Length: 285
Image (tube, rainbow, N blue to C red; front, side, top):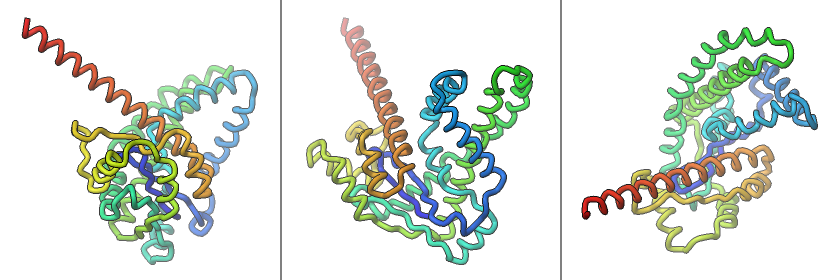
């Protein structure tokens, strides 16, 4: 497998795992079979022009877009089976990490990966068990024969999703602890990022990139604001250059979520400034 570390903004990056030789390690287990069947059914329902199947997929896809991109990224990393663990410890499978060195300093890559591997483990563990506990509560809805038990199926999906993200984070942590990751700066990614990110002044970009490289950027910092590196149209270009079609949706989802987050932060900061200004005016009066 190969890991990609893709900057979305000057402070946030997407991790994605491309599985190159999954057949080498394990055959499809029952979880994979159920997942494959569910995916096939979902695609089939999406093709309906009307009916409850079409409505379910329409609302479902909106929910998928709201699931954090960090969770989707961790889910792309396969769970660490006993066989895979043994093979990786033997060094049979190298795990290269590709990233644009012009945007992420090589010395900070491992620290960034360590953060991605650990910061969400408690959250995924908590909500995995929460979803499992909620499943028996929604099970009686199956008595309604008109449509499938959607609340129950949603909790099943969320429990599985959190488990996969938790498993992916544990696998990534295992790779880092055993020094099985090989840093592989990508000239191709450098070229692609240079192509897609052409807005802004050169000086502003230099300041922002230095902040990203050395990790000095802080969410509380008012000196250097977090800026987007990618725009919504860039996902397709990066996916095409890397020849990973499924990566397009992951990048576009991450861009949309980060843009929304930055907009919310900006609006909150403006409200704070307006409140401070109003308070100051009131004191002067």
